[in-house]
Length: 284
Image 1 (tube, one colour):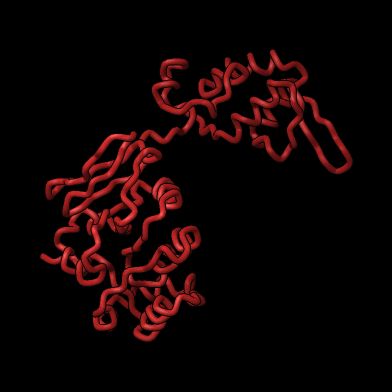
Image 2 (cartoon, helix red, strand yellow; image 1 turned 60 degrees about the vertical axis):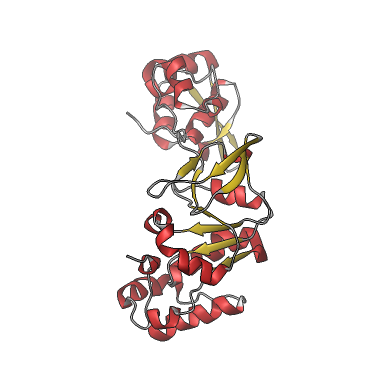
């Protein structure tokens, strides 16, 4: 099946609605085909070129007849599909447009955490070996005294009980809710931006890991976010991976921050020319 992006669909939708579109917004192969079929006319305004349908109905019929993925262009804006089931019911094809079928993020805990989901009490208290996935994250809320710990790597997230001593030694007696941003999306960050809770980021101790925290979390959460640094990190970095450091150095050798404790970690990484993966803190 031909790859059809939402951008292309929206551009074609504009054309079937009788609007002009800048020539740069229409994919080259479609522009050439539709011009050759006599379905588009070229409008020039100085150095700028635009396309307009010669006959909107003829264009709509051509697109719907020749491209399965465009069977509803001109009838319905494909952006309005929210689920694969809607696409399947209306067109018979659930994959006309890429729709995220699994929004949200997983949460975990090693003690009961009383939360709210859709205005009803929801206790995160997963048995060892499981975690829960929050789909309707827009209606998921937690008490303000809960510290949210974002765990970058899935193995650490799944095995939080084997790291309990680490978390308790660094975060005291706080009640902790563990979250993961997998599958990759901005849902977790958006949720964090809407709550006042403290956020602690637990990731790899290398330049790329610090950059993830600074650009994807600290940039949006500011001083209510921090990077978790174990007390023995220098000892571990001294025996860490030079391969990881060398691989990342080209992209991140200028990485710096005005966050003093985090700059200290950056300096340690550059001192030893090594990185250390967070999985090393999982106790067997």
